[in-house]
Length: 125
Image (cartoon, rainbow, N blue to C red; front, side):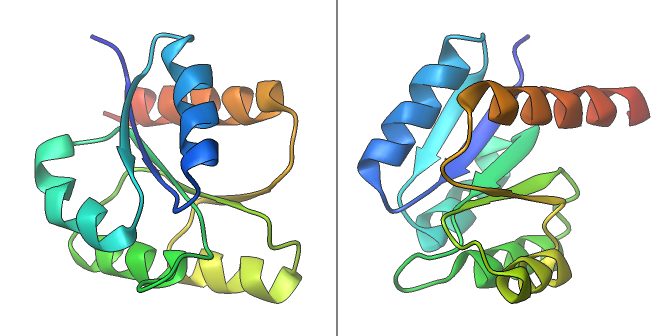
């Protein structure tokens, strides 16, 4: 069975790029354009790792991550953000993000980091 990634980003082109990259590597990708819809379907999606943008309308990535952690979500959550601000990164980590990756980045670096998190998760189960 392939690993499942939940990607939450309000930028459709970012969703398309991440989807293409990870599906090409054999991942199942679940996409949401906002935190509210992602939270609504979180129980049924059962991801192995979550990638979330921090800057989104209606609900910030930090607020969404906080709510996920409050609901008992224990999978790794990666903030994938254009914010290159240490304060925003610290806030994301305090909300419950496992890691912060700044856009743009080399896609191979993103894939390697996500694959490492999935591997670590599988080893602890």
